[in-house]
Length: 227
Image (cartoon, rainbow, N blue to C red):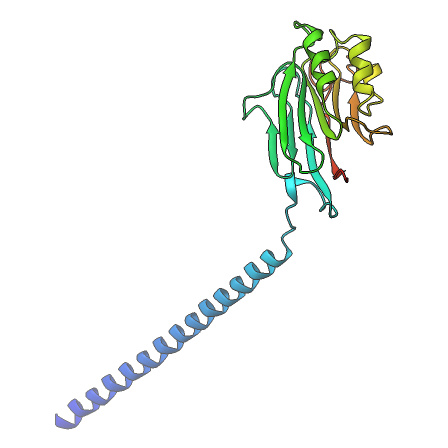
């Protein structure tokens, strides 16, 4: 009886030790797998962060050279979403800022410092063109002028207003028509035509929205005015 009891004890101890060994091996494997997954994930996250594309001012596609101002702008979308004008990562005009309106939206910027000077919009459907003309005449030399249409920016424009905008460097202003979408960046005292201008005609056969063409967007780098 004593021999049989001792044998059972030996077997029980052996089974316990075997189970302990098996459990410890499985736990070690899981620990190794967990640690391996953790290190792999950490390496992946690090690689992802290192390959994430950089963000440039105003969300433009590439950095501007030294002594240039980054800008990005978009016209309005139909009569629903207002235009947006951003310069040097500073949103000058947008629907969120609640400073845009039907017609032509204008932001004035100091050509040397990039400081925002003024923002206004002029209703060219139901408003009067005279205040717009006076505003255009008051712009000082060296001022950067950014413009974008919303809904309709052309109905009340007359020859004088178009001429004053053309003197800022615009080429499309002479052809701007009812509900066309247009964005423009020029300057007072500019000696050549501006390269920063986009214009889409209102055409019922190609319009993206009922009665309005698609939004026009534009980005670039404006040279800083030098003394």
